[in-house]
Image (cartoon, rainbow over all chains, first blue to last red; front, side, top):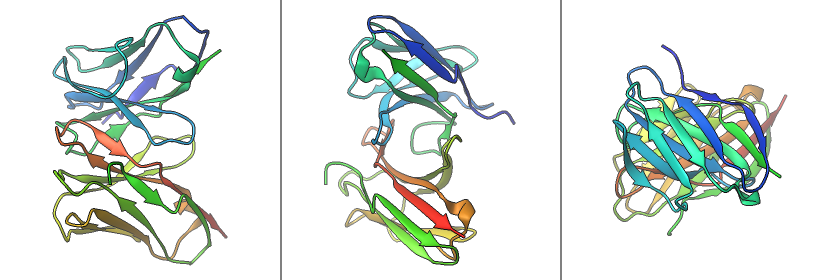
Length: 113
Length: 112
């Protein structure tokens, strides 16, 4: 059974640029959630995708968007990067809603200069 | 309590010591409570998902209890080992059942 993978591991961008982060969910999981962890904070919920549709969204602006593909892998896109977007981005897959155990990837570390 | 809060923020114990952490969460509209262990440079690892008031779960030397009426959960580690060194996160599931609302975590350091 393959675990959750994320790419890239690290990324450096400049303010105003756009970035795409990728996540492959665990085999058999149809739900992917994305979280942002800023320094000194717990992970903050960005949004969740269930069977290719957005199924919930946290308090993040529209420049944070996502996609889920038929194979249940997912992308997180961030436009017009700001310095405060520097963080660790985690994705997690699960069999169903957040009540089920979520299996996390190792994260992508984004630095915005 | 509007947010999920964890205490202490960090602690340092000696090998063999037993320890416990606290997670406080909103008791209204409770859905589920998750505990994760997060070692440096690794993925967060699920420890427990708890749903019922009075629930107790155990995994090896680690156990957890849940009180949904007063909104708290305790995580216990018996006989701490250096490999238990990690950040322990708890998360409450939001009312919609779609998101984990995390605390800031408790970072445990165990010295041999």
